[in-house]
Image (cartoon, rainbow, N blue to C red; front, top):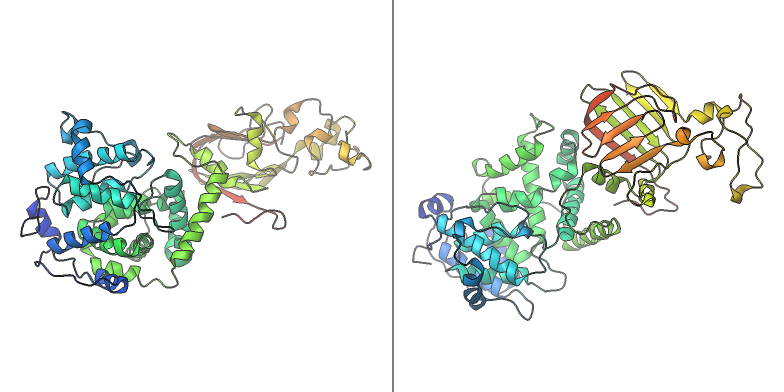
Amino acid sequence: MDSLGYNCFVDREKMDAAIQDLGPKELSCTELQELKQLARQGYWARSHALRAKVYQRLIRDIPCRTVTPDASVYSDIVGKIVGKHSSSSLPLPEFVDNTQVPSYCLNPRGEGAVRKILLCIANQFPDISFCPALPAVVALLLHYSLDEAECFEKACRILACNEPGRKLVDQSFLAFESSCMTFGDLVNKYCQAAHKLMVAVSEDVLQVYADWQRWLFGELPLSHLARVFDVFLVEGYKVLYRVALALLRFFHKARAGQPPEPDRVRQDIRAFVKDIARTVSPEKLLEKAFAIRLFSRKEIQLLQMANEKALKQKGITVKQKSVSLAKRFYFQCEGHEPTLLLIKTTQKEVCGAYLSTDWSERKKFGGKLGFFGTGECFVFRLQPEVQRYEWVVIKHPELTKTPLMPPETTSTPAVSTEPADRLSPFLSARHFNLPSKTESLFMAGGSDCLIIGGGGGQALFIDGDLNRGRTGHCDTFNNQALCSENFLVAAVEAWGFQDPDTQAPSQ
């Protein structure tokens, strides 16, 4: 950097407008507690040259893997990797998940340098599979680096941190997804008013919370992100959660009188964060973040471990190229038995189904669509009028031949088949000799659809995107259409139940 604290990658006018430079200061402290206080107070925030020195020092002190790429490695590999390509047209590594490179105050040369650095990082870190925050981290570091090689070395040291119990940047889809779940847990605990608003206006609140890192590394302006990064380098990952919670609190306060539209809440939060400098200063943002009480690193670690375990048990460890909403539905429902499905259409009709069996049963058909469930299942509508349709065999036992009792209950007296008697819904379809299978098609699910009821039609059919559906008469429930025959889904809810004596509570 020159004496003014700029380098060849920075647009000087943008930098002057974003962050005021009041000249150099000296930093002599070495104690962690003192560094924490200085970082929170913004001691080096108004001196570009001092911030660059502090970043160099803090990142140099990060415990790293034995072999961590440094500036000399970058000089050796950059020409081979970039070749004759124009830096502005270089592709981004797959692990950034199509994340755009934020320019902040970089000039075109700086934006191209970020792409070159990212490709060299991908070459040296083949184990990184998912890291959408990295373009913003590299872009920020480049503002305070002498050259590309120095910026590359700083980013590599952050990625190669190997201190036990400490993480700086998520580098896999499992880590990223579990951090999103953890953020949702923290919002529910520490920002209950904002959480209620998100639940009320969001079709999928988990999708809203999945943006939390994007708010910081993508939407937050440089003046605010740099202050957050100052504290982050000293105190670690916990700071990111704090700031994201503070952003959500500020958003909730700003929208208290005018809730966002249900289909625009994610875009509204991003727009608010991008424009936050108009209403919230960096100092005020950090003050709000650190005002959250009883917030410990241990709590975060426990939540993160629990969420990672839950994801592994569900087999969600890598990002799928195309994950249907139906698969997300199964992910949320598996492990719960029974489940209650509620559907609201765009015409304000409400219908649904009570489903007796864990959705994981669909897997026993080896990927093919197959029906399962028991006679406990039923379908219903609530709007415009209330009507319930249960398994047809319960009201009409004459549809069965002589009941066949399962081997494990052969000593149980036979079930009466007198027409006046109602058969127990707890009996599975296998207990009966039905003239056809159409009276026992309860529930089925695949990646491209959910089906409730079958035989001559379906009581409910919903596509894999949970966007469109149809309803009609089916033999299993002998029902009428539960709403408009062809409908658009406005909202889907699923309520799951577990036996507390036999199953662990869901996360």
